[in-house]
Length: 204
Ligand SMILES: [Zn+2]
Image (cartoon, rainbow, N blue to C red; front, side, top):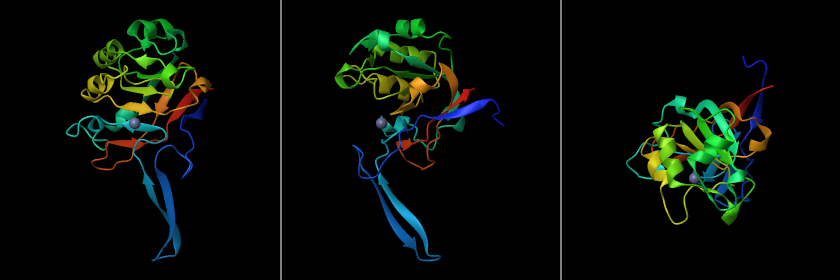
């Protein structure tokens, strides 16, 4: 079906008990047939995950209500190194860095070589620009700040427009600028966000 393509895993492996956020699995034997099962106890925002609008405001769309078509599509991934350390990322930067141009319904994915307080961050202007285009989703690695320092613009502009945010993805230097992104959340009613197996379908 996908001849001429390969899969690149964009999800970090999660190790129970070793993560910065809660993740525990408890093994037990299922009474009926003596098979092994697990209880999973984890935060919804751990590893590669999708944030749905109800993460930001409780009454907005939860993860089970977003259409399936949201979670798969044409991705454009950009290394925003040239923006510089701890600098706001502007729409002009995006258009300049992208060789193929960012178009309506693209899944915009950003990363940089900087982490922590050095990470460049999504500016208010960029959040507004993404919501206006609109992009299908925004994806970021840990090397991108989602909000301007002490502000909450990005969540506001994107979540009110039902544009989910993908966080904690990796291996973005192993994929070309354009590929098909796939990352489906669990269909659990009322869940604010969900772990996903984020995958890039890349032309060989
Ligand atoms: Zn999150």
